[in-house]
Length: 280
Image 1 (cartoon, rainbow, N blue to C red):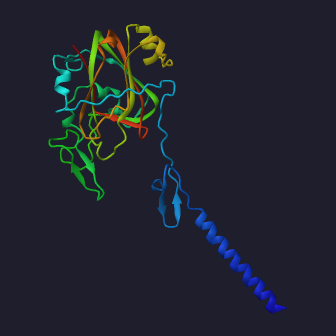
Image 2: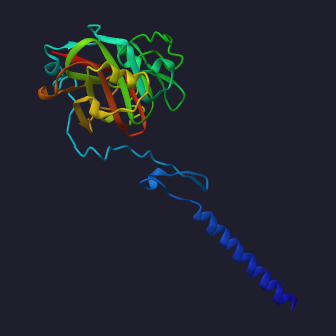
Image 3: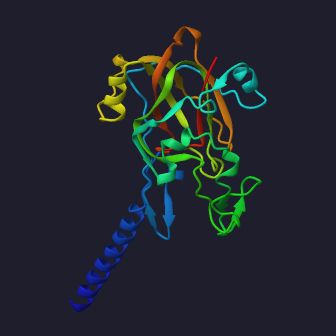
């Protein structure tokens, strides 16, 4: 009888051990789009939740707009045109953003329109060994000795909701015919922060503009005039790269108040050094 009980007890212990192993294997899960989205630490797998990109299902247009970068038509695009930033036509007091949360105070929407030479900002980044390397030649005014990562006012960067709104006014009415987006300092290091879908709207109704930009009223596209829509704008992942876009002549008009509406990015965060609009 004791021998029988011993055999039964041994069998029960082996069954429990097998169940434990099976449970441990079952705890290793895969999430995201494929197995590469999982991160395994020892025998435990940490689930990675992918960012769900935003696509406006009410707007089914898929307009192919390819950026014109230096050497690929940017000079031709801007020939005879005048920068609103360089000419002082951007009313900096009107700048505001809705749905955009800057990482730092100096990475706000103001940095998109400050006209600062981006090649003098944001030079240093940390590599996998903890060393800081120079991304561009020159002197970073924030960290001239390169002992830490730059933090100057060279770019706007932060989290976004989908969509996010960047409002700006001009000192007088102007007809925008083109605009240039300059990418961030470290796009190569952190890809996925470029805009992938956006709109440009204009209005001359100051009350409509201030209701959204100051009072936080919901954006109503019917109260604005759509000037441009870009889907999958193919913004390059290079650092400090200028990508130019034209506005169709039939959509152009003289407006004093504008909004750049950002649909989504790949990672749910956004960064850019400059957003410069041109007339002419």
